[in-house]
Image (tube, rainbow, N blue to C red; front, side, top):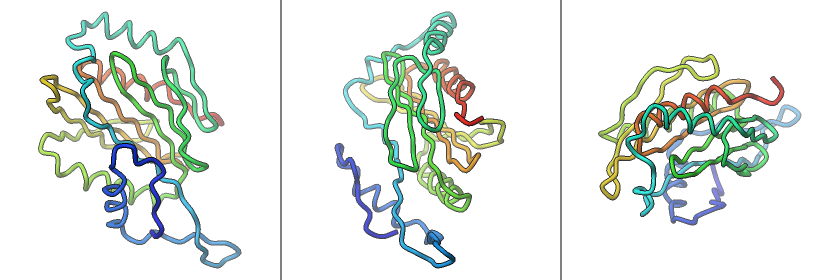
Length: 208
């Protein structure tokens, strides 16, 4: 990877993103008419920045409140060129020609669902990069799960911010030529699992 450029360095995390990308093994080059050629690639990286708003998320929700929140998300379908998602108050994020994402944020959660058009080799390297980065988190818990009918490994962690416990969950899978990932943050553990399961269940490729 050469000539890496950060499109949005709003929080100053661009240098770290570049450092991590440069530690990756060499990628297989693009080909045109049987010859190796240079090519450009847009890689979306989701970074949730710690801020002063952690205490604003709803906590200690009852089962009924969790159910009502999930039901509210089902009232609206968002659709980009690759997939659709039932997510209520959410928006489409432009990640470039090879990536699409839908992002949501409200009083209950922050979540992001992303698809990235890559080959299997690149997907494996991205999975390894995620696994290597999360290994340094002592609070990390891994678990086996199913995403779009495929067996995969999920990651969840808990951290204290402004005296509030924040629950984070990441799941990803490679399917139909896309690296698909879901990232969810809440201050309520039950909601974190319920929201992740809802986003997985409502995700649908446009061409399916």
